[in-house]
Amino acid sequence: MTERRGVALGLLTAVPVGLGALAAGGMLLAGDQRLLAMELALPGAVLIGGALVSCIPGAMLIRHSARARSRRRESAAVDAARTAAALHERENHQRFLARLDHELKNPLTAIRATAVAAQDGAEDAAWRTVDAQANKLSTLVRDLRKLADLETRPLELEVIDLEQVIGEAITALRQQDPTAGARIDFVVTRVPWAVPPLSADIDLLSLAVDNVFGNAAKYSATGPIEVRLREQDGWAVVDVADAGRGIPATDVAQVFDELARAQNARDVAGSGIGLTLVATVMRLHGGDVSIRSAEGSGTLVTLRLPIRR
Image (cartoon, rainbow, N blue to C red):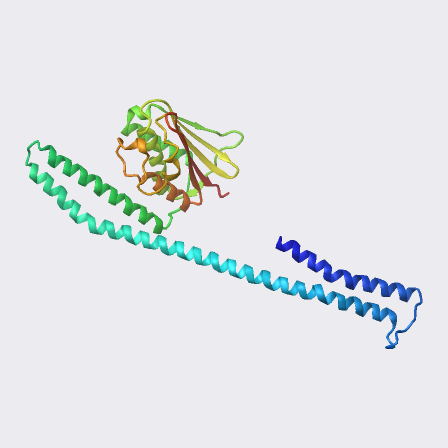
């Protein structure tokens, strides 16, 4: 809208001058030498009149341009302020997680040591519960710290073969959980073209892939797990689909939030950090992750990484 107004004002400025020039030229060609009382040749008067009329939209155009520049400066300042605020908030969050890890590490270690000593070889269910819960909390704090470290860790980029990375992750899952590993089917699309080598941090990327595979195995006790790799519009796309319990519709929007867990996942061990780690790794690589799910039917997680040719 702003650009169209600028063009319109520009036309209003140019048209009177052009019409005055054309009229004056026509008079001169016709031999019209009539003079005004002010002793100014009529063609010249017409030309000056056109120029004077042009001053009105010209002034409007200058004013409009000044306002547009002012709005652009204000918009840029607002965007810069929002970016700075988001960065400051993220830095505060990282410091909080680091401090939380530091403050809880020693108390949790002491609690676990006390629980082990109190059992003293006896079958004491209460102390075993204390030890298990302390271990769970320790794992949660460690994962939160890992998430904070990811935000500041520089990427160690190298050229990788994504198909090989996925294949190694599947092999590792089959060794850890043979039952789940037996249900995985890996399909690679190579026609009309395959996914070319990528520039990525192989450790972080493997962490993300392992988390997605682990979730598919945990939340689908039976049924196939399909992993599909393809190239699409300059992106390397990895789909991980399972026929498990799925995620309730009310929980899908929050699955990437820290500590978020679906209502129907409370019986499965986990900290609620895994998908947050995945989203962070994808973002650091310039990619993204999305999820589609239907409770009782299964879940589809899609990872996308840019291909830099």
